[in-house]
Image (cartoon, rainbow, N blue to C red):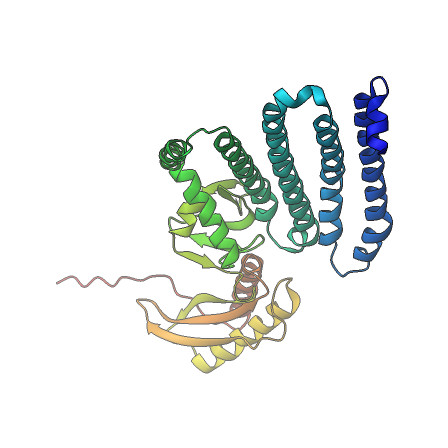
Length: 351
């Protein structure tokens, strides 16, 4: 009855259409207020911020969607558009599909933002920060590609050849990006398997040795002791034999080769050497103070009886200063105790 009265007045159809749009605009605003003041208050009390982020992401698309529904109903109520109704429905179908893709994209963005804040910052690698934007972009392309296919199918376009073409194109792209993809997945595997991590001191086949500074999506950066930065493709590291001096713990043993003259008192040598080793570990930065150093005689050399002194340091780079100070102190103590370290001697017998 009310609708008939409205339509009976001049421009009644347009007044009704405007009223429908106004009602839906008000409804959309009320819905947003309900989300903000009721639903978000409930989700804010949960242990995770993910639900809050998702609700905020869908708020705008839902607001737009309600208004679009009102616009469609308003247009549908006009008698003048009957001949264009199919075209209008097709147009709104495109809009609805794009709005759905836009909503999915916003939810995806909310998830990755939450992950970057709550998860990635707690990891010891920058790979998450590097890879997440790339993965997000790939998924966004995938979402809008699906939306495009739905739209094309709605207009009667056969998408099977298109999908096949995309498959061939994807294969070609994959082949072209083979090295980059290999580096990407190698970096992901290194992080997930915890093979190495930032801060580790490693040595690779070929002699590259240094601290891992960063594991990126394509390369790993290693800082050598001379302070040079070596950038290595992840695939090369994944296929290389790695010595990780920081795993399972940074503490490590150091073997120092020494030799004394054949006429030395080996018991006295052992006692003096261990005393010097203990003193070095106790007083030199990086030495393992509670470690009991020891020696092991291992060979009769050309000029000396050879043995090894086993020390212990806190981490790999500490060995250089500890060994340096140990050799200085040991030489001084041997001189004081008249323990000889012989020079190589060759005896020539002439007949």
